[in-house]
Length: 425
Ligand SMILES: [Zn+2]
Image 1 (cartoon, rainbow, N blue to C red):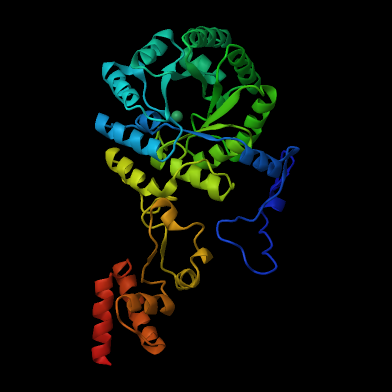
Image 2: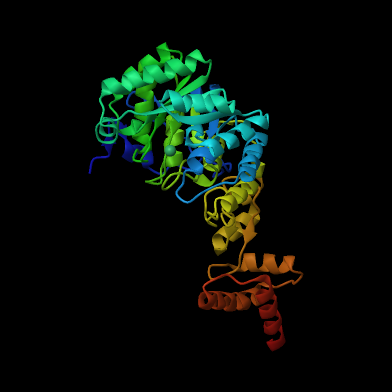
């Protein structure tokens, strides 16, 4: 099978990188994979990303709450908004005023909090929707309209001409009232790029502030996302791009990063990746990926990510899986002998970043895959000194109990086991 995708040599770029000559590599510093991507130097694009300001527009309170079965109370919304604001998220998409009086009241309550973050609401490209937003006191709106021929024909039963006109009417209304406007292209990933560029040109000419490129169904891969955003940047250079990604194929975060690397300035996230169907790009993943995979600091304080994640998990009745990237309770648990030994020698051996950076702690657990170094270390912490011979005997029993119980041993079980072994000996 050919690994050449539009000039990008995948085989070459996926080949394991040669380790550095001195055998050292600092944690959190990935091997640089250089590549020419359809004639575009991706390393240069990474460099330009470092110079650009990246704005996080978190939509936990809109797309996150739009998740089937998820409802936040006003108090929960206020607490989530406060935390996001405190950690430095620059923009919050906070509701859909056209939904009704209760939603308008909750958006108004968020406006009244006087947060530093800009509040933006979601609207159809309909004057009445935008007026409902204005009534809440927000000064920024996302005006969304379907842009793919599939949606235009089978959802709207309209034409491209109708979409152009709808955009002009809604955007004209919003700009006349001095609003900051993101024009949202629903189903952008299945739309004709020429038509998107045309809509963006109209939007830019009418004073829109940015264009939201939505992978509404989460069907893109990062390579196509990169190409599409790059093309739109080149075709309409004077309009900022925002990327809105979904996780249906497990690529929401990767696609968000690809969009940013291709020239987007704004990125939509949600806490824990909450959102329609399989969710959106997770705030914590996007921020940590920017910091540790791309070397770009988006200016968000990450130390409260776990606190924020747990609160949203509870408020949304969607508990956070223990293995959830970045914030899962057990993503810094080490059991296997090799890894535990490596982490004890230097955490950087098997941790890409310090767990404290997101509010987590490291755990060494003792179970089927443990080794003697980890066992001696843990029992030492519990006040029992083991010699190597004792440790090897005990390890066999630890492994067999763990195999039988299908879980690691608790500290209490470990102590009991150790004492009983010493009695027998
Ligand atoms: Zn969405």
